[in-house]
Image (cartoon, rainbow, N blue to C red; front, side, top):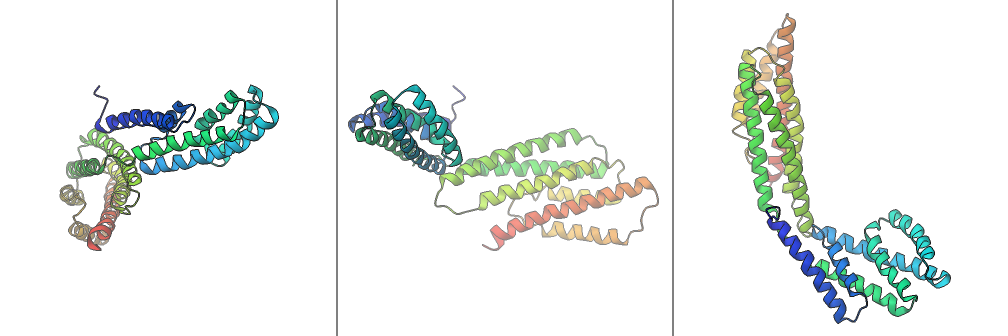
Length: 327
């Protein structure tokens, strides 16, 4: 059962115990159809605290809407399958319109109890609300404990930094030698980077939704910052491997990239790298334009790499300024 990770195992226990507890509580309270409370609890234990609360509210509102429609239809037109079909034809579109679709199935189960009893007695209405409150209450109670993803997020951040560092090192080698031998490896690293960033974004969102009273945006900002850098890296990779001949400016930029590969950590202010890059820009402005087409294209690629890398550094500086300098 290697597929059962720690978080998955916790969720399995929550679903099982929550279902049993809801059924038991419904029995203690003397509610009919107590297993319905267990099913509602099982369906309402979500991945995050925030989502659990949202779903609970939607399902409660869905039940109110369903009872308003169902009680009227059953009372005036009877308890047949045809009436239930008419109810669904009205209930489903309204649920979609008011974003209550997550409560449709549990509410329909509770509405079916009226058909079984062939009555819209107040006691059955109370019973429906009781089952819903027990199920939602148990689900909310069980989701008071949620495992923290903070350590996983920090590990993902280090992995992202490692991948960017490796990519920058490969770009430095390409600019210095123009052999093109690192292209396939760099493309693979970039795919891994994008996959890691997508996973980190999802995990950060889960952690944020579990901490309802925490307002720290560090992990969110970090993820957005690295995603923005990854977009720029895509262009840098493409342009770097278009260079076919090693040249002096390429070697100078390679030295900057090699140094950059050692300074990817989020806390490091990229002032020295930016200063070296600005010095390169100053030299470029003093150059005469190449007369040969190949030389012109190669220099244009170098200049574009410099421009992209300046944007790359600006993203880093803005992040460091917000979360370290201004703290």
